[in-house]
Image (tube, one colour):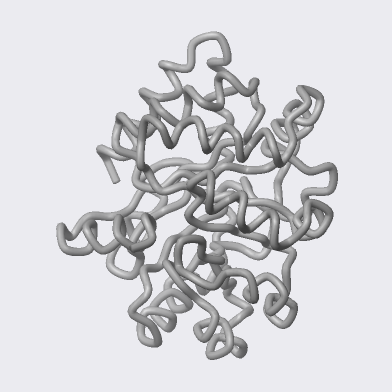
Length: 259
């Protein structure tokens, strides 16, 4: 069974929320990226999302853009990200998702990218600029559930929901707002109703992302979500603690404990 699916099924049986974090591969550097993965696994992060840096990150807010630019300057590449995953797989089995942009996958080569991800131990992909109608090329190479393509759904996506659910596996990445990542206090006005509608149409877990900075942000939504995805707020903690990531890991542990 796919590691993401397996982990979320266990959490559902235990009536617990999933805690998904995002880090940028290559920020502050490759060595620290590997340490961040392993240390988060030790403190119980349920699923790890690793961003692959790109020069035109249309879905990312300013914090992740800065981290991505630093990662690119450090020489991070798709091959190096996959190598990091391969190395951490020797020490932990936490589910890992790569978040990246589609033209970089095309440049790498679709079939080779999928095969290399599976061989390294990547469990899922999030490709925010890949339209639903264009996913058939990628899906042709996802012949098993070893690697799954996570679908995003926004408050403006409800008319397309049947088509999104047809493609969805693992969980639904529920976007809290209509902007980019990291916009604090910018939740969509109809977010609760949006999530309630989603819940009535699918058994898939609902993970809420974009703009979540603390556990209290999602307390009012606890009855309609199955977990949260935290990116920019964690990157901010890493930026404040580049020389001592233990402080950033402590922040992660505290977030999970209070979720």
